[in-house]
Length: 114
Length: 114
Image (cartoon, rainbow over all chains, first blue to last red):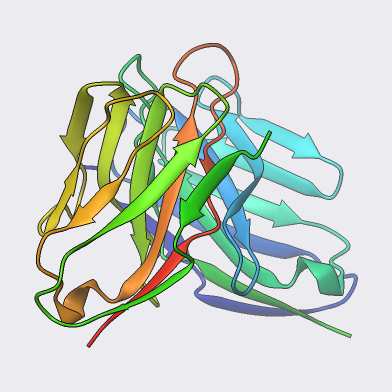
């Protein structure tokens, strides 16, 4: 089955700096890569996702890049703010008519310091 | 829309007891799934369903049963609770066709088995 590795497990940045979180996946058939943000005690919420036919996607301060050849994808957050502090999870799945089975990474605890 | 709802929010069980975690969604999503979240391990898929009457196992199915008699509901049954099943359980749902594949998560159930 799919295996997703995520690094780093913790990341501390100064407010206004950029943060980068990296993930690798094992199954070359995976074609959907979402990123979720989870605040303490809350449910995971989608912040951005990318399909395998796209190399990069941006939404305001958040961007995701995908390298299919190397089987890795990254989350980039620019101009970080204290409210960006949370745990971020990457995931991978093979989208089919049979559903959307996500395999998650182990998470990155991001702390944005004032 | 209420989105994805879960009950109860908290539950304490004794070893050997059984119980059912409830999950419902009002978005007419075909795909529903159950994850457990343990510290340092991300979210792991327990069981999933691609439609009423169709279920399948995920990564960690042992000790859990599911059924899907309607599109809206996807209960998770713990047959004989064990301390290793202490975790936070999330239900999620998504479409399986079209262009949007976001999985929407419920608020979670925090289960403690003593």
